[in-house]
Length: 408
Image 1 (cartoon, rainbow, N blue to C red):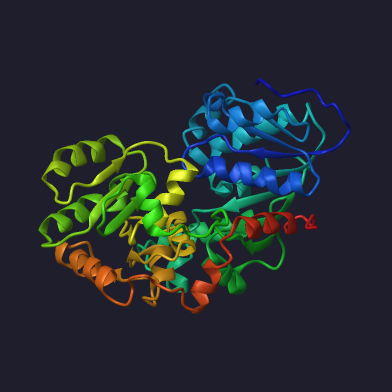
Image 2 (spheres, rainbow, N blue to C red):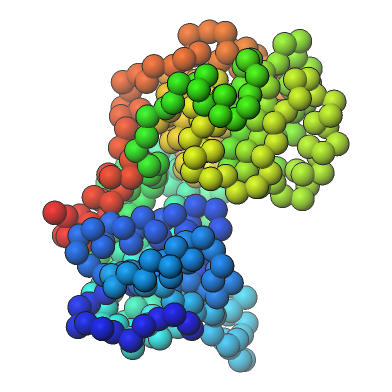
C-alpha cells in the first residue's frame, strides 16, 4: 500500500473500493467520492497498485485534498490447500481482496461507510462468506445481474438452471450483515424484486447510469473542431471489441450505395484493430478511427457531430452508457433487440431496432435512421424514456447520498 495518510482528524471516512480502473469503473469511483465529499464526508478510494499512473490517481495525488485520498492495495498472498482451490472462483477471490483492503484501510482511518461501485465482483459469495467489511455499513452497486431478465420481458438467453440458482443466491445475499442499500443500474431488477425480494434485507433502489450534464453543441461547430467534412456520420463509441457488432456493421456499410461515414472512437482490442486495418482502406467514405482513450472534450464533440449512434451489440445484455450519452445529446440509435438496450429501445422512439445483424437488416436500419422521422430525433415521452431522463450525474450523486440518508 502507498499514499494512504495517517489520519489528520478524527472524522470518519467513506471507503470506496474499486480494484479495476478500466472502462467506466474509475468514473464510478470518482463520482461516488464526489457525492460523499459534497455531502461533507471525506473519502478514501482504494485500488490496485497497477493503477498508480491512472489519470484519476494522478489527479487525486496532485490535488492533495484533506477530504479525498487514494491508497493502493494489491491482492493478498494466495491461499493454501482448500483456500487455494476456492480462489479459482472469482467471487471468492475478489471477496478476499475486498476483505483484505478493508482490514488494512480500517487501521488508517475510522470508517463510517464502505461503497462498492461494482459489487458483482463478489456478490454471489455473500451467502457463504458474509460481509467482507466486518460491522461497517456498506452500499453496493450491481451492474451485471441478469438472472431476472426473461421474467420481466427482457430478451436474453434462456438459462433456467443458472438463473434459478442466482435468483436464490440473490435473495440470500441481500440479507448480508451491514448492507444498507443495493443500487442497481438496471430498472428491471426492481420490477422483479417487487414480487420476489425477501421481506427482510437491504433496500434495493434504482441508480440511473450517469452521464455528466451537457447540452449538445451545434453539429457544424463540433465537426469543424474534429476536422470533419460535410456528410452523414455514424458513431461507434467505447471499448471497441467484437461485441460491438463492428464486423457486421462494416460489412453492411461496404454493401450500401450511399453509406454514412463511420466513426470508430475508443481503444480497439487486437482482433478488431487487425480487422479494421485490413478493411478500412476498402471503405468509402474512409472511416475515422480514434483508437485511443477519448477525452471528455472529444467525446462531447463526437456525440454533437454525429447523426446517429450504433448500438447493434452482440451478447451484451446489461445497461449501456453509450445509450445514455446518445439520449442526452438527442441522437437516434440503431439498437440491438437484446438485453436492456433492446428493452429501452423497444418502442422505436429512440431509433430502429435490429432483430439480427444481417447486412440487409443493418443497411435498412441505417437508411431508416438517416432519412426518416428518426433523423434529428426529438425525445418522446414513453415511460422508458422518462427513466433515461434521470441518467444525469446530479441524480446519480443524489441517489448515492439518499442511500445512506446523507442527502442535503
